[in-house]
Image (cartoon, rainbow over all chains, first blue to last red; front, side, top):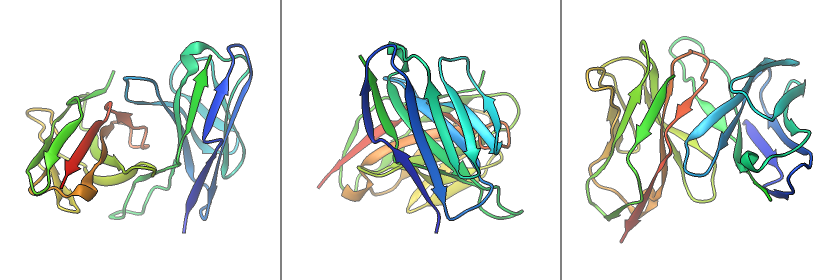
Length: 116
Length: 112
């Protein structure tokens, strides 16, 4: 069965410090990978989307970047965190099903980031 | 751009009560619509979906009908249980690549 891991679960960082959040998927190959963020009082917002190694699509202008060094690894980074980067970060994967099959997205447990 | 609006929570109900959580959307074309649920201590998981107008998605006693004329996808359940307590997220995909646009989520609390 497929499993998605995220770490760390919680993180408190000072403004201006770097960030690295990691997401790995087990039990599948060539997944589509996603990073979402939920800021306080807002819905989940898609940040990055990847269809393969080294292929990253940025969905909104921001202070963050993403990389996909391996097929099942997705990393979210920042060189200098801002207060506005605080939020709940979710990694997700999906594999487009064959016709008539199930096409759904599977989410990791999330990382709660607080920037002080 | 595309957006999803959900009713504010928390929604507090007694067991066996009828549940409605409202969801409306703004999007061009014909997006796919989803309800995701997050139980305490767990990750988001797909509850149900609908891909075209008048489709009804259903799962675990929950239902939602894709209403193009009112741009709505309200979640309903005839008789809620304590185990239904969770946060419910309405979402849409207007790209075909599962680039989901989410609402803010509605927390449901069911008491015995």
